[in-house]
Structure formats: structure tokens, C-alpha cells
Image (cartoon, rainbow over all chains, first blue to last red; front, side, top):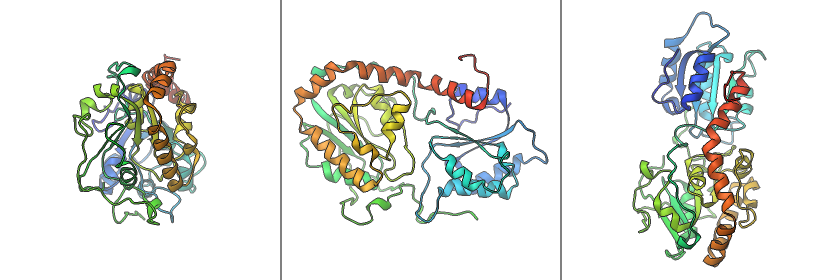
Length: 188
Length: 181
């Protein structure tokens, strides 16, 4: 039994199911190792076993964006994950990747091509996590007569496509479009 | 061999490197009197009272050029707040949301942008669709909302049931017994 780590955003009910079905050996989150691979190396070093059971699993949570460059067929952080997994000689079947990247199986197949067909990670694709879901639904009434503005566009953290959209919409009258943007200096 | 991206960025913005679209950074914070709380203010993150004054949420997702649909609270908020939305993000996100049971507004908004794979062309189409929407009389929009309230109710219900629905699906995939089945 492994208590759900505080950094995990996997829904509690699902974590409970995974915990009761598998022997969870370790946990890592892309947000923890994408810029700090030593976090992942440390996790594998601390949990590495001589022999793994059929039910042993590492839960790897992936809900943040990856970096894709044209010269690579896979995301850089996913590439790094599997590179380190092989470096530590972790059996691929012990990996359960909980990801919001629907279609990432293609990348996993490429990266695990050297593993035996029966020794492959399990990929669970779902965007449901506690970061994006809430059960606090205020009941906002649907009152067409209350609508004063055509649209709202809240451009949060700085991204190139948000700058582009802002430049395209900034001349729209403010009584028609509610347009906001965060002018911080961070690009991340 | 581990690869570290330099410069370290997550924004995948090769789409604008031909410089044909002005994406020059906006240095100052631009506010509007309707929005009274800062971005990502947690109590307001999913629903704000002032949403009732707007018809449509223009959702600008974390990424635009991306190989997969990317769904976050930004678009789910539209379902929670019973608003229409136009989605600026990766291709095929709307069809993915349809596969999860959500309904969108193709009868009123041109949603052909969703299937445009080229990021720049998709961006330009989304901008056109937004301007088209902004040029409609507000009465026409109010009338559409009034006569299609069932779509908004359906989406809120679908969102509320989504976690259990996904739990059932994942348990089936992993052969885990689930008493909800």
C-alpha cells in the first residue's frame, strides 16, 4: 500500500483502485522531473528491486505539456523518462503511465521497441485529474437576458499564440469583448 | 542519452517562426472592469459569478502547435459555466470532447477550425470565427442560447459525471473490479 503522494493529481477513487490492484513500488510526476532528472533517478535508485513481481507498478503521472521538436518523433521529457528507466534496468511492464496525452501510445511503442512484446508499459489516457476537475460547481444561471457581452477572452500566462490572439482582438470595443492578458515577464 | 531543451521552453511555438503573424509580447497587464480577480485565483478558477454576463468563452489553451488534443480546466470551465466557447489550441480537441459525450455549437459557430492540422492556418481560422461571432447582433445570440439551453444542461451533467465515467473505463481497461459497473 502506497499512500497517494500529495503531488499526485490522480483522482482519489482511481488511486484507491490502482493501490488495491497493484503493488505500487514508486511514483513520479513529469512536473517533478521534466526540468530535474535527478528527482527521477533518485526515485528509481530508492525503489529499485532485484526481482520484480508481476503486480509491481510504478505510477508515472503525465499531465503537463512536453516539448516537441521537428527532429524528434517523441516528446523530450517522455524520451528522457524512458532513457532513465532503461539506465536503471527497470522492466517496462512495471510502468503505468497516467497521461492526458491521448495518442501517446505511439511514442511509447517507439521508445520501448527494444523491449519484449510482453514487457511493455501500460498507458492510461485520461485528462481527468484533480488539477482540472472540480466538484464545486456553482449554479450559474443561464439567463440570456443578463448577457451584456458577446465574449470573454482571458489570456493568462504569456504564450506566443496568446500574444497573436491579443494583437488580433485588441481593437474590438470593450463593451463587446472582455479581453484581459497577463503582462508578466515569464515565458514559462 | 538525456536531452535537455535549450532554451528551456514548453510552448512549442515553431508555428509562428515565419513572422507573418504579429506575436510580439504584450508587456503590460491588460484588465477589464468585469474581471475582478487575478488569473488562476483559485476560488474563481472554475466558475465566476460574472460569467453570466458573457455569451462565449474564447479559450486559449496552453499550447497551439501540439500533436495531441490538450484539455484543461480552461475549456471545462465553459461547460461548468454553461457558456459557448471557441477553442484556440491543438487540432481535433472538439472531436475528442465529442467522444467524451460533450456537445458543441456547430449549428451556430463554424467549428471547421478543429480539423485544420496546420497550426498557423488553424489560428487564422479561429480569429475569423471569433470576428464572425462578435459581428452578430446580441439578440440573435441570446435567442440561440434561450432555445438551446438543453445543450448547456447536458454539458454540465456530462462534466459532473465525467470522473465516474472515466473510472469505469479505466477499470475495464486494467481489468480492475469496479462496483460501479
